[in-house]
Image: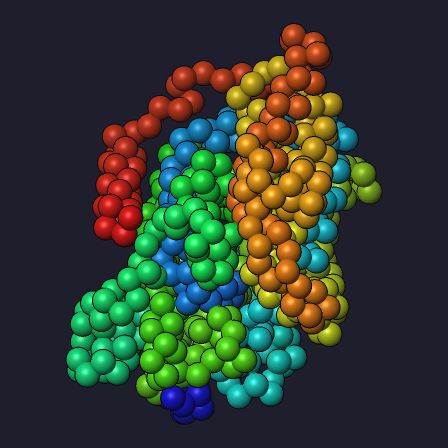
Length: 568
């Protein structure tokens, strides 16, 4: 296994950089106006096509935490982790049919704007500030840090800060052109991501085949993996019994079998794809049919993602199991980079380009969303109410630069301790705790007219408190086994020391928190006025689906059903 880059690797990467940069400049100049307004800069003024929206959604979603984190989970748990990607495909169908029509009919451009229109200004301001803090100090820093660490490990391990700065500059160049440039360059980014990712997976399978004496046949390699590690090709983990091994318990804690399909997976995906400025912004500037088709196209592409981000992890497990692969420190998070070490000259450069494409597109999308929320929901409303369109666009550009600067400062010395908790865990820890409250606030706000502003605030607080309680304190306070849940023993690192604790599967905690949050919000709303002047008017015509759209939905669902039947 050789990790050194050769001339052809550098050539491939430089060609990728030149193509993306040149295309971005061309798009910017071709569509540039005499005066750029906020709708043009932040939403691309409805000029994004359905394929650009779909590609941009995927490019923004797939980043270093997916390549590194999900490949690592593939190494540890196997194909069951694909649930995050495949349930996302269904969640995107739900959002395309029911969420997007409400946003577009009510001319919603930011998520805080939705909360202001539906509830009140207080709810909107609180969430705008919270989302800014979350996006800057959790998402932006983790993407930048994990991305730099991943690429640094592939180019010799001595250029962490140089790579960090390079990623920041590359993403800034794309972002300063606005959503138009981000959306259309993401088409190239996602193409590189898919081609590079598929090439990596294909060659990982050929390496497995070669090590089993089957030649260089990728299909033979996949068949060998099915036979050698059948436990890694099960979508559903059974509930542990007293006779279960600790490994089985630990797998169930992160992917709790059928129980996670009751609520947890839906909360994660509906909140991420439907209530997240970073994601929905790509579709908010389009007409309904274009937005729907783009979102459904992204859902179709999600079916491919496990092949790209998870399959190399399973290949790494099989190779590691037979002594053909070394992992640094034995950590699952090194599975993807370890597999890349087998790639031949040129293709290693393509894989690094794919990883860079994922990181840069995610960074660009994230800082654009930060800029949008700050400019439209805080600066325009509370700092400079008289600012004209040009002033707001320049404020957005300044916000882009400042957000990236703050991200670099906090990432430079890993001030937030991302490396200590693991990047994927770090993101889930700080975003997952609020997901039940946020989703409940959006769902009831969209589809139940009685929901009040007081209920929304109570729901947000209740969701956070209950998610924290069930994750951290419930086993000690309520016991290890109740009618609501079962806790399991595992070991976690605290201050560098392994400690035995009792834990409830995180996805089950989210489901419980969501259930009780909805109950609290319903009770408070029923105690409020019967007529809510802030409620949205809904009619059935909003949710009608074109025949061509229905065909795409059916094809996606049929493929998804076949995958679950195959790996049940």
